Image 1: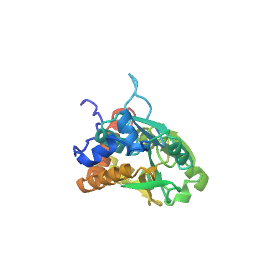
Image 2: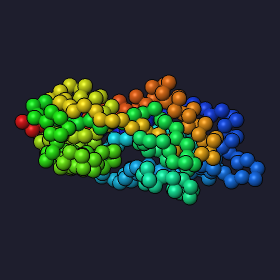
Image 3: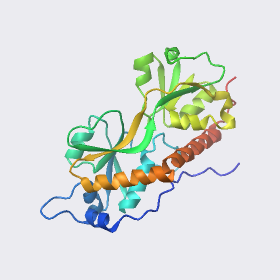
Image 4: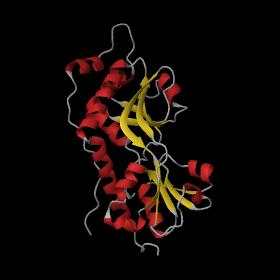
Amino acid sequence: MSKPMTFRPHFLSIALPAALLAALAAPSPGTAADGLERAAQRGKLVAAVAYPLPEYRGGMKFRTPESLDSVLLADLSKRLGAPLATVRSSASQVAPQLAAGKADLAVLAVGAAPAPGMTLVPTGYLAAPMAIMRTDTDIKRWEHLKGRKVCLSEGGLYAGTLAAKYGAIEIVQRAPADSLLAVRTGACDAAVHDSAMLEELIRLPEWKKFSARLPAGPAVQLAFLLPAADTAGAALLRKAAAQWKSSGFLEQSMKTAVRHIAFEVYLDQDVPDCH
């Protein structure tokens, strides 16, 4: 068997303009440093995210996360030359966290305008819930999930929503690979994850038998949030987002993550697909 692949985000090596570097390096006279200025000065970027990735320990199985937030933050960290740290947040927590200086910025999936005093910078990535099942499933509509076992990942966006909306029995797994493996072995009737990820996954030949789907639900955008006063930081984020889009970085990062997730499922599938 070939050696397991290691997920290494491919960063864009685009130099920051000298003027922007100067803005990040020193605050304006008489004012305190804000957000990304402060991060560059201290040499540490603190980002608020919905799901901080668990620290990897020896012997753990590597698991690729569902969200691309860690990939984008890693690229941003490299641009700033500041190591990354993360704190847990949510749509209701992020404004006070930023106001209190507990984080320099946040990256969250949002479906509404930001709270007063915050700036929202879209990353260009949209996430929508989608379900996949065995092709011989009798689940044809979202309403058919009532009373059925549905696997999700704890780092995803949809835990709690399917039980509340459709009466599904949610089985929350550590990561997408664990959720998808449970569908292949019959432990779950369906798996619900980001539609872009699942659409890419079921193109793979080995997923043909598990390519039945429910149509994607409403999409939300993955976006950066930061204090409105941090105009230099907002300019940097807008520039980064534009480069991610024009270079295809977002799409390629998603496809790379899917390949790794599929390989993680392959390595762990020590029992046949459920028949």
